[in-house]
Amino acid sequence: MRNSLNTIFIICSLLIFTLPLTAQISEGYQIATWKDFKEAAVTYTWDDNSANHLTVAQPLFDKYDFNTTFFVTTNFSPDWEGFQAAADMGHEVASHSMNHYDYTQMTEADRRHELEGSKSAINSKISGGQCLTFAYPYCNVGADNETDDYYLSARTCQGYIEKSTPDNMMQVSSIVCGSQGPVKTSIDFNNKVEEATPTKGWLVFLLHGIDNEQAFSPVDSGEFDAHLNYMDQNRDRLWVSTYSETVRYISERDHSNLTEIVFDDKEIVFQLTHQMDPNIFNLPITIKRKLPMAWEDVKVEQSNQLVNHQIIVDADTSYIVFDAIPNYGNVVISNQTVPNSNQDVSVIQNLKMFPNPVSSLLNIKFYLESSAEVKIEIKNVLGQKLLGQKLGVLGSGKQSSSIALNSIQENMVLVEVHIGEMVYYEKIILKKE
Ligand SMILES: [Zn+2]
Figure 1 (cartoon, rainbow, N blue to C red):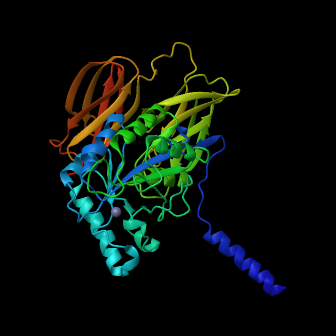
Figure 2 (figure 1 turned 45 degrees about the vertical axis):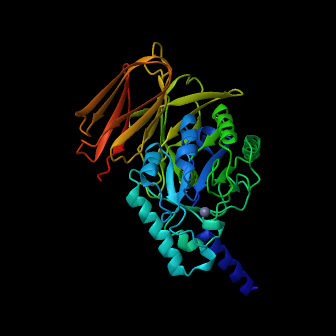
Figure 3 (figure 1 turned 180 degrees about the vertical axis):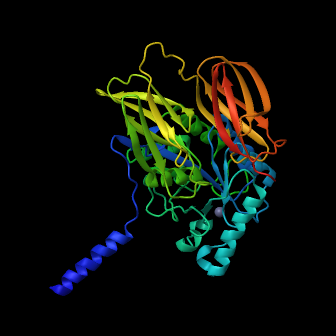
């Protein structure tokens, strides 16, 4: 009896000390499974850097303003200039090893050499981003603990749709597309995407060639274009994101603590924090909170910057939905339900600045609710103006611009977008070549 009690005690202790720390979320809040509470995450990955990736595939993603992931084999003569241009557009350039060897047929030293060498090659060639993820050649898995030393996640191709949190980030499943796989036509792609929504899954497509080129299992660009058009039509419920962006979102969603520190009739304040590397895990994640009764209008700010929000009504309850960045200062939701307060009408949506860090050209994209005069100003952290660019009066809808920052000496600047009287800004890190 004493022995069995001891055994139980030991098992219980082990459980306590080996369980991962789960996130603590204050009551009344929910962190979205996927960005903007979308129904599924969809990632497109391209292996083996064949010629048409940059000339045929990338323009299709750019056309619909989606981002994709290129898993590059670094000793297969990648078009580094082309991949840099892709990275500047927000696409991910990640590793498909140096030499495309079979990881089940190599020594540990050789595997580590390939893992490390391909990552450092990409990091030295591509500025403004980091090589964070890996795809196994032939989908032949090496050793998780070795790959984990260099990458946040690794992709294989077991052929199933991943859960919203994969069981093993070092062996993430994908679906082979094109002539040699089960997904060939736009209808096949669309159906596969819809298969992912009931479980709020993560669907990773594995693509090689596109159209006529020397590459494995090509897809037809017309079919693929038709599929991306479908994704564009359904972008309010399907989240297209790069491989590393999805991995980072999952980690932040699962490991951030949300602690409410103030709740009175004027404001709600909370903190969103995690213990992971803030230089990597700094993507905005979507949060929903029940809105107190009688709060009809609110303003959301994080670190004193205005954050876009949406109020949704579900049955008799109102909720506020917005994005917040972990470890980026307090989030304040203030009650604006007072007469004549109309100065906080949101006039801009989906403001994106990338890459960040940036070495020279910063891309700025946003959606204007209505026509307005727009200018961009670059300021140092003391608020002194360094550069300015007037865009004039722009119409409503999607807008994009870019500004060269290579003349700036500072390590960090505030990039302000002035829409009429409103100012939206982001901190941008400058990377010196
Ligand atoms: Zn390959």
